[in-house]
Image (cartoon, rainbow, N blue to C red):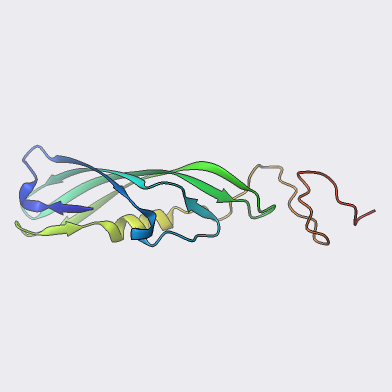
Length: 136
């Protein structure tokens, strides 16, 4: 997302953009996969030497449960702020900040449901789908 500092009016500016996960190097994740472009909305205001940006990101995602390896859908949402010192004719690129904030908000441990039983350690059967035969 690019912000042209000299085009920010006194009352501020609202920007909206769809960013491909690949352009932010967010593809090929094992626990979370973005299904569509990421919706990014930004409210930008400026003072004499700084810009203030309130950013919200949202995208449908597919998670992989760390216990049973099943995949399930969800929505990734994050809100954050960026403050930057700027010069009047500068162009500010925020993709790095957006990428870092998304990665920082990744869940540490994704579980499909609180009572997930996981996989059988012997045969790999998903114990949520039924009991395995190897334990009998």
